[in-house]
Amino acid sequence: MALPVAFFGIFFAWPVVSIVDRGLRPDGAWRFGRIGETLSRPDILDVLGFTVWQALASTGLTLLVALPGAYVFARFDFPGKSVLRAVVTVPFVLPTVLVGTAFLALVGRGGLTDELWGLRLDTGVWAILLAHVFFNYAVVVRTVGGLWSQLDPRQEEVARVLGASRWTAWRTVTLPALVPAVAAAALMVFLFTFTSFGVVQILGGDAYSTLEAEIYRQTARLLDLPTAAVLTLVQFVAVGAILGVHARTVRRRETALRLVAPERTARRPRGAGQWALLAGVLASVALLILLPLGVLVERSFAGPDGYGLRYYRALGSLDESGTFLVPPLEAIGNSLRYAVAATAIAVLVGGLAAAALTRRAGRLVRGFDALLMLPLGVSAVTVGFGFLITLDEPPLDLRASWILVPLAQALVGVPFVVRTMLPVLRAVDERLREAAAVLGASPRRAWREVDLPLVRRALLIAAGFAFAVSLGEFGATVFIARPDSPTLPVAVARLLGRPGELNYGQAMALSTILMVVCAVSLLLLERLRTDRTSGEF
Image 1: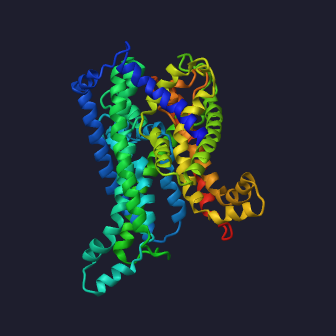
Image 2: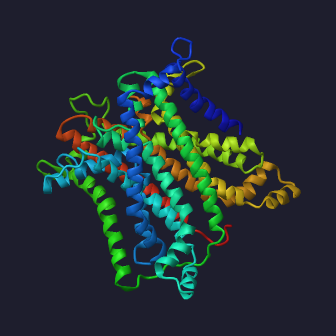
Image 3: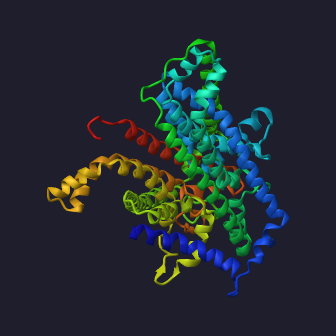
């Protein structure tokens, strides 16, 4: 636990506490009255209200659209199902900046809907809500559909034999078993949309702002640390409560999973109703997921003189606007280097943390587990700005070092590594380690010979998730990425912030490249998940 605790203490707790300290204790005396002053401001109340409202609306809309998809993927068997499952998961690993860019190309000025019908949705809240559905569709399909596929349909059939109608059988048998999974999916979607930044930053503009976007505005534009500190505390408390409810829901879900049948339940659709449901789900996937990505790619090739590679070629040279100190194309190499370094850090820290959590140590380990989740509950903007004001003097003067960006990205990757590796590590039979020790193996050799072969696949999957998350991190990176070393999400945001057709086209081209890299990472993860041999476990 020593290295993970030190890592989180230095690179997470210290920067966040420093921001709060500077905001609420500027002259050495605590000013807690600023909390009430800030939360009573009408503009801040509007931000809080919109943050909660859009999160609730996004969650409800996502459940409405994605639950039929969860049923289809769980109960139906059709050609191309595995490929389509991977496709609907692609948006979840995409950077939120890219998601905002895709919907800007679809419903924004000069977008597809604007050209065809003169309809622009980027001037209202609908673009934000639809982008959140696009991003979180896979959360519901994976969480609810994964459980639904394991529920034995014969339980409903027994209820029908005993006289229950189809609706009564589903309501009294299947729905109670699904409630924990639906609640868990809803809580996760609410969490992701409550802390939304990139999507709101691109599509909301100055008209709409969430807590995360407002923290960025108060720190980067207004340099109002007291207000940013208060908003950080509010977000931390709110997200902490959400994570607490989520943890209880997960425990309830695990209890329900003990009752499911192990056999496969998917079959080909029967009857006109089921085929119509499958067609409707496929149509919604095409409109909500494939169409925004397709329009983004199309815009990257569509120039004033027709289709071509003009915008891609322009990525390799500097323009006269001074947007970049280096050609935008260099952002690709920067992002890959940063992501590889962040993945190595996240796997090392997360792997050690997961190994520590497999040991039973009571409240100490439970507290350590909660510590690992804290980066998901604190604004990434706060962490990035905290890096600037804390890691700028000896013994840790890292502001001029390239390692600052991977360190910030690794903070977000570690929770994914822990959650991926922990179930597998806990499943390793302790007697295998004891047998190796009896035969004379040292603890290090026992780990190499016993644990590592069993967790190798989980380790690779964890590394893939950490890589994808690091590649798309934006909230902290936008503060600490050097002007001569931008990452892909930062470069896209900079290009979209500049007027002109060339900047817009280059943003589409960079977003397409970023999408391809993320999609390839996801397909490799899917291959690792499905390419299993029976003798490995």
